[in-house]
Image 1 (cartoon, rainbow, N blue to C red):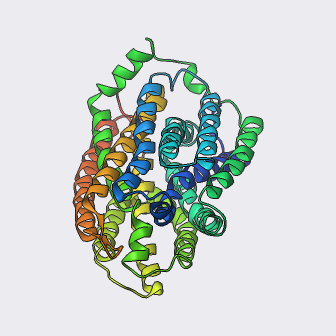
Image 2 (image 1 turned 90 degrees about the horizontal axis):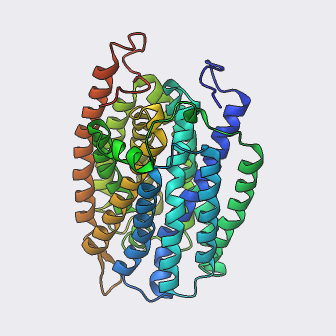
Image 3 (image 1 turned 180 degrees about the horizontal axis):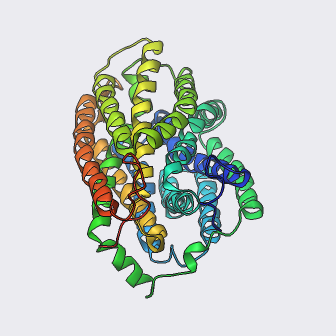
Amino acid sequence: MHMKENNEGGFNRYQIFVVAILAFLQFTIVLDFMVLSPLGAILLSELSISTSQFGLVVSAYAFSAGASGILSAGYADKYDRKKLLLFFYVGFIMGTFLCSIAPGYTFLLWARILTGLFGGVIGSISFAIVTDLFPLEKRGRVMGFVQMAFGLSQVLGIPVGLYLATHWDWHTPFQMIVIVSIIIGIVIFTKLRPIDDHLRNPKPGNAFQHLLGIVTNRFYLKGFAATTLLATGGFMLMPFGSAYGVQNLGISLEKLPLLYMVTGLCMLIFSPLIGTLSDKTGKYPMFVIGSIITSVMTLIYCNLSITPLWIIMILNVLLFVGISGRMIAASALMTAIPSVQDRGGFMGINASVQQIAGGIASLIAGFIVSEGEDGKIQNYPTLGFVVVIAVVITIFLMRVIHQNLKSRNHEDHPHIPSTQLPLNPKPD
């Protein structure tokens, strides 16, 4: 299935469908992960667990997703991507269903591990599909629309999930995710065409040799290193975000959904704009701008005390604009790194690295912060400082990748503007 040559000025109808279905698919995956953060304040008391135990529930998903991505990477380029997507999505639905019936902490922990085994691979398959079906000069826009899943999960998913959790039970949001996911899975099964162009000229060797070739490629390793630090920010701040907002900033549990809804609504507007800007001005410049905004807003946000809700809303929106700017630009930039035959495997390992790094970050965050006797989250400013250090280092790592892509391919692609990166680098 090849569409890169079609409709150069914009997206055709099928491309619009692909972007939409991937965005809704990502919505369910993101919501499944993000809903744990606002449920944090509820779960800490309902299950009588500590902050470090809750951090383990969050990171368990990440670690199992990381292991799954590495184990499946060798096979990622040997099958039709549609079939792979459906296989892992069915497993994700099963895992989420188990979360929806979890009677206690231990069962929930194992359910999160199972969900991660399947759900953690889906994002990498989606990115491989985007790379297969869209040229680089359009990928910023595509990533912007797909990343709208974060905004959509906050506008619709998290407020509805929190409402259901507070009025019924903390299991109910997971039940909602299962129902929506089943509908999306049926649409993918019936409407998405096979995606198998990469099978026409496959790399020789078995799955292990394919995996080994990817993990020993020096240029790919630079990408994985950048991803490791890229994951740190979100995973460190997110798990305790709701508890910090309620206990330290003075947001009531009833007003918490409103904060997520306003932030998400703004991100529905900003995400496509950021994607379009990254295509026009360049992926790396947009990444730097997003990183600067993220650093400034993190330092401000993590040092607040009791604050009026409207000020928190403005700061939260600006923080997420920065984070989205980084993630959209970085995601588009990363798609330029692997060759055609390595895309699925590279994206799988990259997602694994992201998940494992995020899991470690969540665990570290659980040890940095603690809950005081008054219920307040302590050491949050320290957490913010650690995040900013990681953000600054990542700027330099991404610059190295950006320069390598340009220098390796300029001679082969002289017609491509300096703000655009070539499609594929030469192998190491």
